[in-house]
Image 1: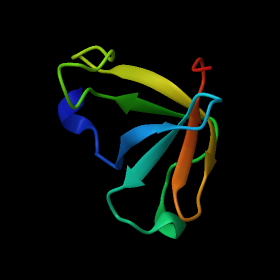
Image 2 (image 1 turned 180 degrees about the horizontal axis):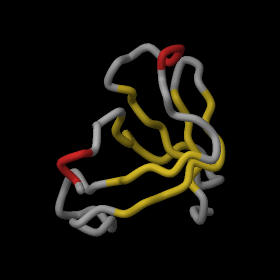
Image 3 (image 1 turned 60 degrees about the horizontal axis):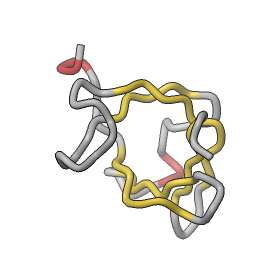
Length: 78
């Protein structure tokens, strides 16, 4: 259920040309993040313009990198 989910981050915008996205962690400390490669997460739209279903969609994190920015590659986005 959506009520049982915990908000960890939000997608800021696309990053580069390989389908990656910059995400912003809510705790702002990437060393404490539970997000990891091969983890399934739920994405919900933050605006009506989003192509994500209003009911939310489950996506797989193929690769996530932590540094000055947190960069995430979701499965199926080219």
